[in-house]
Image (cartoon, rainbow over all chains, first blue to last red; front, side, top):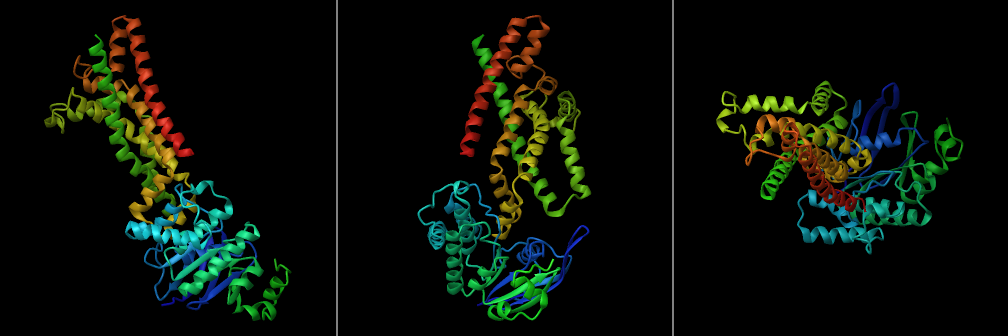
Length: 239
Length: 219
């Protein structure tokens, strides 16, 4: 079963700074949607709200029909942040964390965790201390840690920023493979337009705290309707 | 003489270790709870008051703690029926009162210093409540171990409370620190210094073990 994401009239401010000013966004079930926009547009804040890590001031997020809720256990959502945040334990135990929380028996935990490590090219490092991994390996580990739970919704926040092309390629292949196997709904936030073209089927432009435009990837990049979107995809930052 | 010294040292270790263990059981979850609660809900008045109490208790004079426990467990006190006055149990209770705020405060700082991204990662994987607290304490284990070390250091070196509550009874509630007070009072400075040196050696040994554990955690 695939699950849609429905974001309705989300507003969020941090003190005096208004970040999101009524965001509406519909991500269809089973699609990979890339949300692009300049730095500071509120992409990360929006993704954190969708993930349940931040509460909106107004509006609601419906995931597969469920409204705002705390945490993602039972909401079937995976989240990978821009900065790899590994736990101080082995690579295998990092991936096993969510499985153990769900009370899955040890044999299956190990089998699933090893398969997830294999997905991101870390099958030979299960016992490595996570904090000794390179940035690329650590981010691949974070992806595996989210993917092992096979969430129907996967949220990725600039998940390949600051990584070398080899690691970017590896993670994108893992993402595409995950999407094919699980028919998951994927919302990826990025300012890498090439990545958006490579992995997404639809894209949207977040600017000034609002989603300015959404379209299929081809139209979004070749024939954007909004002047601001056109400026952004053509490399003319509309600040 | 040696037997008596070993008995005194053994009681000192027992009282300090037991009170640190109890204080850790209370203080580690409480410190972690305060830190996570503050992060999740911001600085609410109730949390600010709780923190103020904990940090004020840091500086609680041991003699005051001893006096309070004395009143609590003395014959006419509310816990008088337990018969804890002038027993190691009473001394442990007094030290728990002194050590718990220290363990709580240092744990609070250690858990607060765990990156928000790590906590978010755990939350995004479904951790909340007790599993989240346990996970964050594990992430902060080096700082938490410091909390235990500082607490133990306070307990093993404490004299005022154990003197009041224990009564420094030979063969029963005499510890190394109360013996030092006694020998100093008698003018036996050489014995007092010798006991002090012995206390330092024991403390050094304990801290060496804890420090080794901490270093293993860093690697």
